[in-house]
Image 1: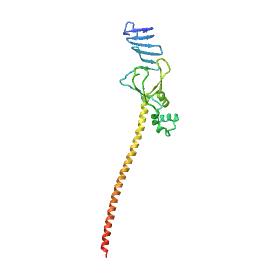
Image 2 (image 1 turned 30 degrees about the vertical axis):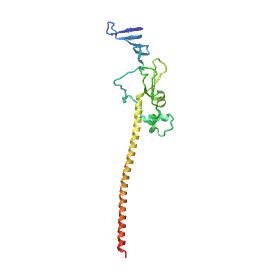
Image 3 (image 1 turned 90 degrees about the vertical axis):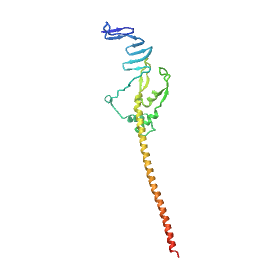
Image 4 (image 1 turned 135 degrees about the vertical axis):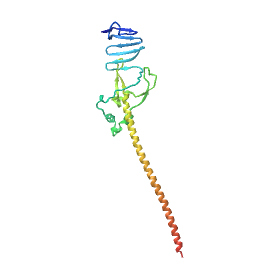
Length: 238
């Protein structure tokens, strides 16, 4: 059967195995369980604990209010769930060209550097909330949107006002990984150039040493010839 509770109901403990025999519970208004309150209006579900809103749920998702922890955060990323998988370098290159940035000439090669140049890391404080007194580090969603609009999402407000802007920070991991890879590739190329220069210098040092030895030998040969000619002149002198 179904147990329907109209308006507001308060329970220290609700046991659905009671003689009522209900298997479904319908609450119109709010349901209080101890210091916690569960409210719903058909469009959203709100959970309050000690008069503080902790969770808001809708048909399309929801919001966790305050500070939450998770033992093992996990994001679904199975290849079977994805389509149009494209190397990030190509996507960023196209986005860079769409912005009309004429300071670069090779879109794909310069895309990673362009992203790092355009993104502005900041420190800030939230105006309200349990973490309002702490310094936070990150980005301003409005600025990120101008560079990488696909990383910004609308976040519904609890009161249904104009949505806030949120950043998909986990997607920035891929962008920063790509940037690190491009920088590492440049470092590897520089190391190759340096090693080639060192090898050239070492080879040149060897050649210089050989030439120096040959010069010393030539000087010795010239000195020996001078000595020999001197002896000859003495021998044939009248």
